[in-house]
Image 1 (cartoon, rainbow, N blue to C red):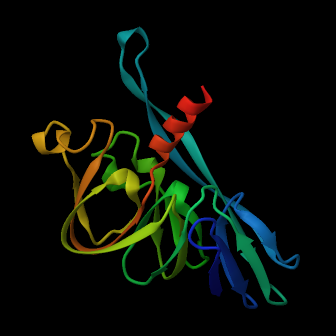
Image 2 (tube, one colour):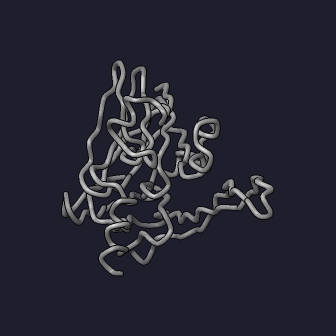
Length: 226
């Protein structure tokens, strides 16, 4: 599988060439152009999302099913090619998996080699964030992963300790230990608002970050449109 990223950095698209019997899995709706001889299959990943129900002052958590639709494209009898475009304007980053599990934000996942297994959610987030776990994918295996960023991409080789705004993180290797910095701390309050989440990463591994965040961007758009 040969991957070429075109139009970097602002309006990137991925051009992928598949040899005979090669297959790639991509986020549904990301295909811009493809060879007509590629075989297509659709699959679904199922997860759940916790929702707070405060009716009648009886606060409780309920679950809502959350689905991720993926398409696989395979070159059967001849070679083929496909062009993928992310929903947001920015760079596309190609990561090669070999040793560690990769945790990828759902909105940043674009495509991956078919040999990589994809699981919905990330259990380690459940004790830290009430609704954050199912906003991520757990990827296991060997091959290439394509991720899209809102803005530019910064890859950090952590060998020690880093503090990173979680909204800027689009992927990280599971070799890293992490913990949430309490919003009550004076240090936290001097830097960011209570609506943001700072994570303390420790160990050795890679973290992939995007320069822009979708929540502030959508808030600006809403204020301008109103």
